[in-house]
Length: 295
Image (cartoon, rainbow, N blue to C red; front, side, top):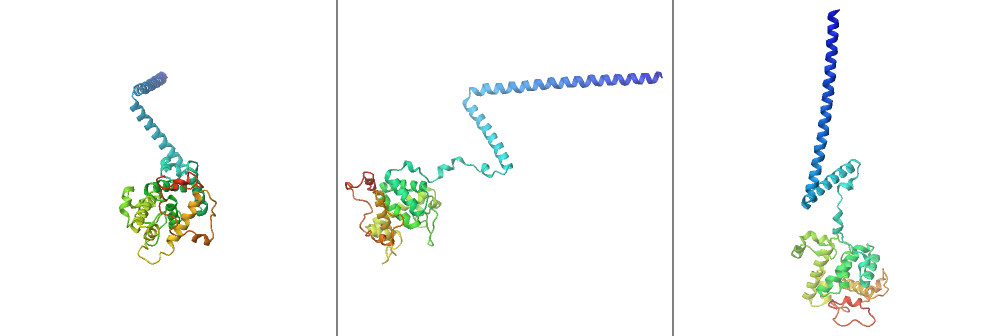
């Protein structure tokens, strides 16, 4: 009996010792935890105070935080099946060939609307091309509506058009022949950038007209029929569209789909490549005078 009592007391002593040990360990961990949180808090405060006086460090910290948050957002979006978040590119708008129609002059806006309806294309990209045609026309001494007419006949305003012989883009420039001209725009793939193709096409057209000595001859060279007896009606088509576009720019109502007879109403040589440097007729608005390079 005495031995059992001794054993029981020993067990109770061990239990009390274990309880004290566990309690001490718990208090110790709690104290360490509190101290750790305090240390972390102090570290955060110290970093915040330090970076507050260092704009560069603050910006770096903000960039890292934003990158981390963006990465987390993309991971969650991918997990939910949203494929656009991972490939989002807000700066892509800078690559778009588009212009606000409200930013165009009255002439440019009229031409833009007419082309958009006739060729069933959006006004915003056509507006950007019309603006560029006006700018390049002034630089090259060419009527911008002539540039747009060439574009219309060549590609119907399709920037990705390609002919069987390798003419590419809006103005169907022979890229392999004029590859040197595309060097200024980063290489031959710029043929499919609408504005770059327009600029190179205007340069080629300008050279063709200078080489031929006349607009009709220049158009024949442009289409590759400079030494042929017949250009397949190319010059007449361009000049007919040029005539219509000038009418539109002058404020006249022109059918979007004129009957075939209208296509022969404008004689090939009746409109010069560069309008003469004379004041515009009284019936033509001041804005129409912008069609004349140099005015």
